[in-house]
Amino acid sequence: DSITSIVFDPSGTLLYSGGRDRVINVWTLSDMKLKEEIKIMNTPIHALAVSPDGNTVAAGGRNGELVFYDIKSRQNTQVKGHSKTLHSVAFSPDGKYLLSTGEDGYIIKWNMSEKGKSTIIKDHSGTVNMVVFSHDGAMFASIGSEVIIRDTETNEKLQRIDLQFHGYSLAFEMKEKFISVSDGALIKRFPIILDLWKLDPLALIKEAEERSGKTLEGFRLVPKRIMEKSSD
Image: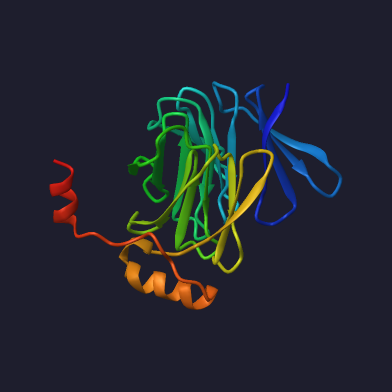
């Protein structure tokens, strides 16, 4: 059966793989031999993640199936949240949270100290294909028909990037100044400008003119009340 997800453990000595056979295979990287088979899923596996301490595996499948597997105790916990196939799961760098996304368009943030406790975020226009944390864990980004960047602790939306295509994968660059996204064929790179809508638009235009040495024409800011009146 085909393999749909692979992930390294934090020690770099093990590789976890999952696929349509519903089995999580654990491989030793030194000799690429199968160490263990973990059979905890009822549906084909579409997403895998290993916690930063290497003690927990999260697996996502169809029909909203999401299972946490404790490697030491060999116990698993199934949680309910999504209604359709999961596409992505990701642990925060400190292991405090796990994010899950899928076809239902939701992002669910799970508190790992209380696996049944979660926060549901709905802001995408359709399927959410992937979610990732920034390297410092301060932000997370999700991708579908748009990219949305949020604050990890507050869930506040920091930036939205509307795409001209449907995105499937994304990654923060090391210094969190740019984010790269892909539609499966091309990769595009976007600057991260936090709280863009809070900035002074006139100041942004002035800075753009100074940097380019050109003058913007054919554009003006209209007070909201005038726009509302003219649309009647």
